Length: 231
Image 1 (cartoon, rainbow, N blue to C red):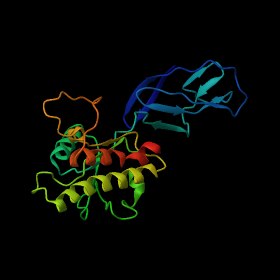
Image 2: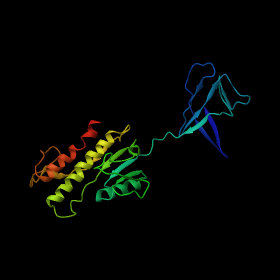
Image 3: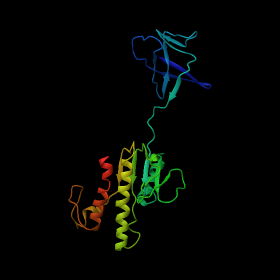
Image 4: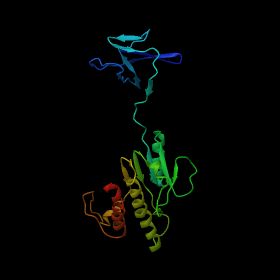
């Protein structure tokens, strides 16, 4: 079936297939899907207009049909949630996603200045409000954490390094797990420090985990995402 549709001063030809079915009594209708957009056309059976545009056996496409609705059938554009967007990795990732025209919602800890920024406080309950903005994300990417090179690793700064990663990860994982439509994927940073100081030993992901501050931190960091794993 060649279907002519007029949009303003232009006309477009869509090639559609009508499924083979037995005639149904009125007021039954059929829907036809066309590419590149789905054109939903109401087809009345045994009820042809005075001037049908294209009669096909008992099927008639009405010239003045009240129910012709183009629907974009392309999949929705990917939407990403990104924390730590101002850091070294976060900045590079944000720029790469922007180059692909992929919308990125940034979690920040100051008052938002842009529409794509969302205030969050990992120590608060709820950490993110409104959480509805996080529904139907393609992926959440969590890169937040105190800058390791910011200052000397005093006992106080070590606590900050750990808390900024473990607490924020658990908070975000818990928030996402409570959504009606959580992200399809949650990506969380970790570090090779999980293997500890092993000298010249060749390590891979099957190697046993290490011990010490960084190794213990990384293990707790990864474990903090468990609410999302359980969801």
